[in-house]
Image 1 (cartoon, one colour):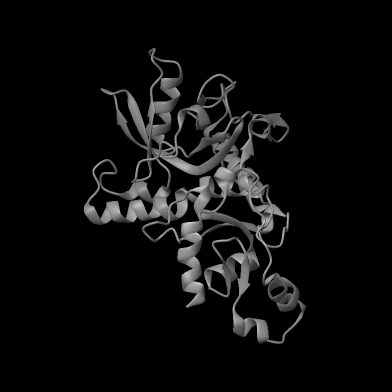
Image 2 (cartoon, rainbow, N blue to C red):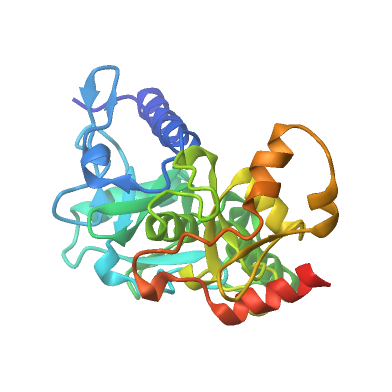
Length: 295
């Protein structure tokens, strides 16, 4: 039996809430097992299809989620510089295509899951289909709601393109970056070894706004929030040899236990590195950042 539009919208809203709750609790990626066991008011509604990249519940008018597996993406993640994802129609007529195009016609909000490794995904939501190309048989999905309101998302003006590229760089790549960095550091602060993911950040060594500030694991550090803020503000530095340094004025300051134990006692401490050598922070980028700290 088909659910009413009101019921379908209530489920979509609850899916966003459910994903938010897990993200706010520190989840930096979602397992396939968790996603296929989502439920609404006692009804199990899998958010992934076991055999294809589109989830069209039988009692929905339109598509609920789309997915690209980790096997199909390189580091580009399948995301254009403007924050658009291209998704192809099913080869045969009808079937999944009907509900996909219904989502486009009605402007229904979707979830886009992007694989970061086998069986694990990051989520972008709400996302919207902003363009349909029946000749090429593809739709284009905007990974940020604001992109829907451009006059022509497929042919951006220069100022719109700059805005969209900055948005992708600072916001849309962050979930991928966080997932990969926290995974590399085994959900532990590289400085103090705090293991509560909800209190950890994926910190850039070279800021993402700078030319060399790419969202790669080797340009990242898993840091607790106090050490992330201290690193960004150059109150804490990390040498190219992976040792922690604290600003000399801060070392001489007398304050409470947080300053003493949280920062001053970290001076000279060796960084805890990822087990995989390929994930370890770039010494060149650390040197660049440390020069600003030393100055």
